[in-house]
Length: 621
Image (cartoon, rainbow, N blue to C red; front, side, top):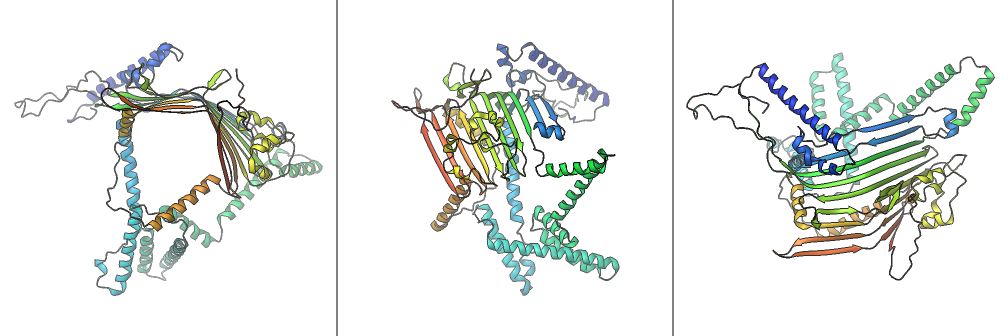
């Protein structure tokens, strides 16, 4: 519509875009006026959210509807007052305005097509790394060069089959490490030779052909390497040539920065006596043993987030078709300045699915320093969550796909999801006033309220009993202790199978594979070996790294789920499942490797259940 088939005058272009700008400005004013007339708390505002009315009035089809955020950040200067008062060095308070996102089937098709293209390109690029630069036909007359080239093509074929069939290969295999080391040394040697040959050529001590031969070998080797490897090999060659390493450069940079800080401090205390300077340096040496804590506090409030999935059924604009060619019109031509008029805009994107999350809050606090001990607290709450089938009528039970029931109120607002994550990492066992103890993270269900504890609040026997076999590793240095707790309200979900099949069809739109016909048929021994390797990887993920310990607990207030499928023209097939309130607990240790998992019901018939963990205290009001 914006590109003419024939030359047009500048005034015609001006009038055309002037009309478009007027239309866009008018649409923006109408939408802004509607939002002003019907505020967020108005009962009719629900009919004006997302694409329900904006598709009819907005000039653009938005992927992310206009939104904004407000952030207030306070940064305190590091001095004696802030050190004494233990105030946060950085305090951020962020409010994100309601955000609405709309995604349609054509956009999903485009995204899937783009990701498929990138995936296929990466596979082809990885295969091309091992492709020899010489063909077998070109070396058939040279017996000495024929055997290496044929062997290289066989290696290339095996590598391509391994990539296409996704044959697993053990990482850091000894043979691969030796081969990579040889390639690295060969590349560095060629790089050194190329530089030396270039220097000799400029001095007139070597011909130009010698340099070109070395550069050709270097480029042929680079064709089989990734960009990351080339950069790392060149950096290593530079370090070897200069005689300096990255660690030396960092040490020099740190020394220079320290010298600048000392000079700035001497200028700040200009005119002091020798005794005052000696006292200042002595106090600085005392405080330098324990640096200023890196404290931080962040609060984020997100009133609502709404996601719409739409089905695109037609083109974006409906316009009058141009006149046929001159021959069909009997040689009569229409004037080129006649604009193409736009007819009534149709609703081309129909809402299919809507998901909404309301009143989300994220709060985090950090205390301590990485060199001694650092403690972090994080808390996430959500007021409500719902998923709606927009194709179903309001009175139909299949309309509400999923919802969460609030289980408590915090500051007068309902909460249907709560998550608390605390971490504690200690590198120095010495304790001074103001340090945070281990007891402050052992109760993650308390949220951020635990950060007020100090060294005079030790661990109680009840806290240590919850850690199980980790209670003997509380005082270990160099270990990262993670304590997490989640609580989810009662979940109600309905699975309408025809609707789910339709969504799965939309999800796979635009996906394209390479279409190779190679199929892997591994032996039973190879399958057993792969299963053992996968099991080892899963065990490593469960227990974590050697410096990590963790205690994770989760509470689900209950689940009610049912699936409905078509049976015949008069009946449907329904399957229903219910889950009573459940508590799960997992404890893991990286060194020594250990993992423990247990769960039990919170409500049992004719029995009283005692929980090892206290209830969630969230200030019910």
